[in-house]
Length: 322
Ligand SMILES: [Zn+2]
Picture 1: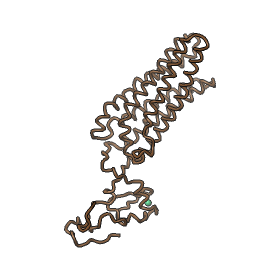
Picture 2: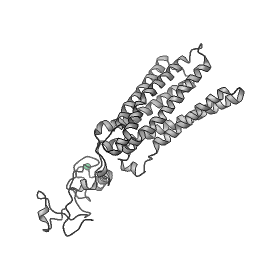
Picture 3: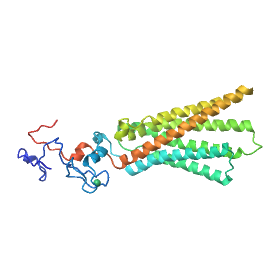
Picture 4: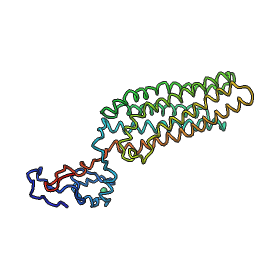
């Protein structure tokens, strides 16, 4: 494996390490490189070799672990908190959306869910939003450096906005419970509900924009996402889709003030927009959650740079390095 030290420059050798010519394909790994499948330390093995434990080619591990820009990545302050934070942030939001769909569907098909089931579903939904907000804390300052400092205040504001969002969602829930009350004023109730709905949608749009810079910064740690093999515009398109929902809310409001059949038509069209926007929003949340699950291992186990994998570079004098 080792080509043996050429006598030239042997004075540079550190602790008996043989001098190896640089950039030879059959070069062995001089740094700690855990096998991508079984985590066996491949240090000292040839790049062309196989893992002695599980026979996975060393090249497969390098392909999975190497990132040419790994050296530029700022170390994450608290990898476990950050990794689980982004997973909780995105996944809880997705689950909250799915629970809302279940409650809405039960409403639409007037399937009589037992009263305590509706209450439990609503509680679970709120809990998910709380969890998502706690997860968002991980985006405030995941690591040092100027870029994160620029995203710090927006991310902080985006996280704090979970409080008014929770308040709005709680208001919506209360209205939905009162909705069954035959004595409530239908029109007034509808208007207030629409306002709360539009405000919560607007809050989420603002949050997506505020949390995006630091979320993208984290996503850039993944070679896969950085090179665009994974869509990096998800958060922006999710925000755009929510604008469709807002437009639908606006059309519904307009429809209520137009008398007769036209008004009903406009209201129905608005409802349609809200529905389509909500479906696309849920799909978008799914995309963000998938990205975060992909990102978590990269945060927990940062990629290796070529230099780290090969160990200290000690080019022989006769072969100048590039
Ligand atoms: Zn292995």
